[in-house]
Image (cartoon, rainbow, N blue to C red; front, side, top):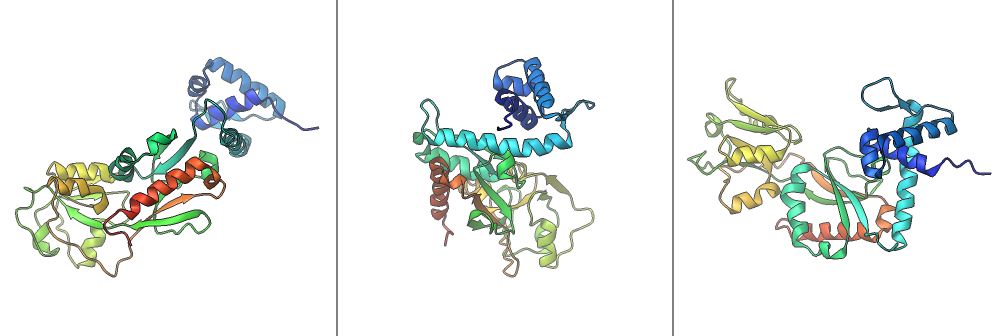
Length: 301
């Protein structure tokens, strides 16, 4: 005889654990927080173990709760996928994709808007993050990952290497230099991006340039803010060329000097999925659409 817990209780537990809130789970499932709490209590009674630590103000899973959630989340995801893949009426294909924030805003979203993917009736949920989220636990179908890894254990393909350029407002740097020198940046504000693997300090070290001790700098978490600061004339940013192509075309940004580091290994972007996720038509469509857009890039080889 199978030991099957009450499915309604399992669904309530998975939502509360994923959202880390009884209230948010109640909103998602269109019930009251009290109903969520009741269902989870009945599940805990059925299992014989506490799944949530209720002694903290913020909802936290117990060790047993974490183990249970890691498996239940995958099971429910597989059930949903199996049901949708049968073509259940009234359900549009859906997928979840994790993308670095700046790449999502400045490249992927505009490309998807120009494609015919909206005509396919696919619902896409974006997660803007640089973290390497787990496909099973987070219910991901696709991810664009940034770094030096090759993702050999996944269904993965190299998209492009990172091509970094220095950019600033046209009026910020009155002189265009042939290359990076101490004079070129002496009185400039350097704009840093914490989430980039190649920073100004690496560039300066490569060219043997010592930054002035009193030289000003701005530091942001990701390239979205760094690019905006450069557009506003706040300094000179070192960013991915792909992310500023539109701003360069519009002359809102210029490249005051070229930076070539031929001996330096660049991080890259990879399109990553799993074999099981790629069996879904919606995942395969988005996967191919991204590859097609990459092939249109001027530097694609």
